[in-house]
Length: 323
Image (cartoon, rainbow, N blue to C red):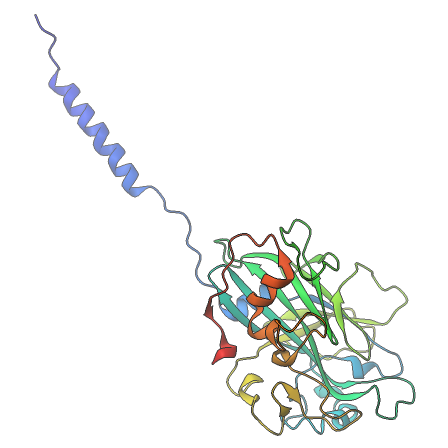
């Protein structure tokens, strides 16, 4: 007698197949992260910022907004600095540009004066001062990406700093050191150091600056504080979108604010000697890297400065500097 397949076995097999099929259809999907806003991205990677101060004029080293004195006339910012201590609220400008592979976030720190504490005769000082840092953040499927390096602005030179473990290597430009990370606000974030008076920026070297006057600024989305003095170690700085309505970029052609493209008007010390991010320039990185690219075309600058880039796009999906 031939073996017969019992009906209940057929039903059981069919039920099992149906169950497995439904299981495959209803398996939990990989988490999808909502797109982070530019402010969220800027806050996530905003640096803990160490600002050296000089005891001969502490508040001349406080960071603030270009229009800290209530107007966009940059010819009165040097003089108003002495009269506006309560208005020297800590602010830093940010801009986000984006390719399919990376976000580039520029932070700009403004001071009303670039100054010295010796007789100057207008040679070394100038009204207005803006220097900053650009963060390189790889899109890795997470909400905020992965920090791969930063480039800082130190007067007429740029300095390159990948964090420990970054794949980036030097290419046309050398690696100048390691970007140290510090924990704040629930995130591990980059750290920067800005010198007194001249305000050039490099990576923080890990020092606690014992016995030295330093203001330590921490990022905030909505709070701008004034330091209590030149050695205040806990001051919040507010992130301000460069592209905000009636903001810094909106005034790019305002002749009260800028003497020429990306150059602030100033008549104390050397005239018109300070630049916004789209006017920053490294003096010796070659003619192929034009003035302003750290902000306006950071992907090009990164492609020249660094090696071992991995998957890398030069095509922008968003770039407010082109609008």
